[in-house]
Amino acid sequence: MSIPQQGGGPIERFEQLAEYIESGCKPKDDWRIGTEHEKFGYCKDTLKPLPYDGPRSIKAMLEGLRDRFGWTPVYEQDNIIGLTFPDGSNVSLEPGGQLELSGAPLESIHQTCDEVNEHLREVQTVAEEIGARFIGLGAAPIWRHEDMPMMPKGRYRLMTDYMGKVGTHGTQMMYRTCTVQVNLDFASEADMVQKMRVALSIQPVATALFANSPFFEGKVNGHKSWRSRIWRSLDDARTGMLPFFFEDGMGFQRYVDYVLDVPMYFVYRDGKYINALGQSFRDFLKGELPALPGEKPTLSDWADHLTTVFPEARVKKYIEMRGADGGPWRRLCALPALWVGLLYDQTALDAAWDLAKGWDAETREALRVAASVDGLQGEAAGIKLLDLAREVVAIAEDGLKARAMPGASGMIPNEVHFLDALKESVASGMAPADELLEKYYGEWDGDLSRVYAEYSY
Image: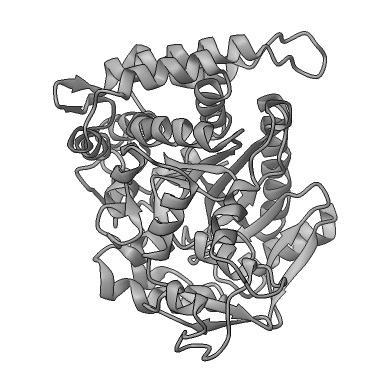
């Protein structure tokens, strides 16, 4: 979750909204990779989630990372709520205390994987000192809503109140899910549209390959990705597969129109979140926002509003892939490998679009549902997700070979080996959720607490 920024004069022209997104266009040589991943922290002895405050807490984690590894703290009111580093990376908190690394924009998956590894080593070091551990799963396997702390962020207080009014699963998403994402660049409006069409169409494959949340509230929940299931009952105004992206005339302005139709959450002023729940950014542009009468938005207000839409793939000044469950260490490098392979080589991008271009909105949505329920065993409209995943991973592999981005030593010629975990999944037909269920019904004999010992970082 990005840290809000303030500044800039009021928006004077409607065109500035689309121009803001368009300003993200970059020549191919400047394309970068930004990986984000979340994980649950818990107390080693009780297996309960870390509270915000106290000797064994999220606050202690942030202070430990600050003091031991030179991160700069970010405060809201007097509470430490994040960390930044000069390279552009930051550590932030999801509502239930999930610790998120938003990585620096880097050139290769070798670099982004090194960054993830370094971050997890730092987290392990501090966690060990305070008696905590972290685990990568798509959803909290045992904890209930009342077990979860709330991080001291005004944005989350507002969102929590609103979620119950617009869907049935919003607070589950906020407090008890984790994801891994990758953020990628585009060269032009046409490139953004093609990449988003592929991203939205193929997102169910990522959901299936990374499915890792078959448990919830101590029970098998009937889904390979409960996290993906949650997103389908959250807030229809701001989630989903964006069918309009596949219509003629799609471009930056059409995306702006969509975001403007999404009700607001807040306005950030002087370090505080002002409640604008359900209000209209269109009214804000006219100086008629009830929350701030007479005031017009700045571009930083627009940037904040762009972060309050949650489709399966999202456009800001870059594209975010949002379909994957959080997971084991090696899959944190596999997700960027998958999407970089598909989107950063034009031949691979065209091949991926050839796979998907004949699908209609109903097919894309049916694949999304099938991925959340059955993972790689899912099927919709005559399409088997395992067969599709096999083709997609092969295209990504070709794309990474064509990129030919060597490791720092030059000994590793490309980034293909980062796909190994996914190649194993398509060979076996098993995603992480399938392995978890096999253990649950087998050697764990239904004792779900064993997930902590075996799957923590």
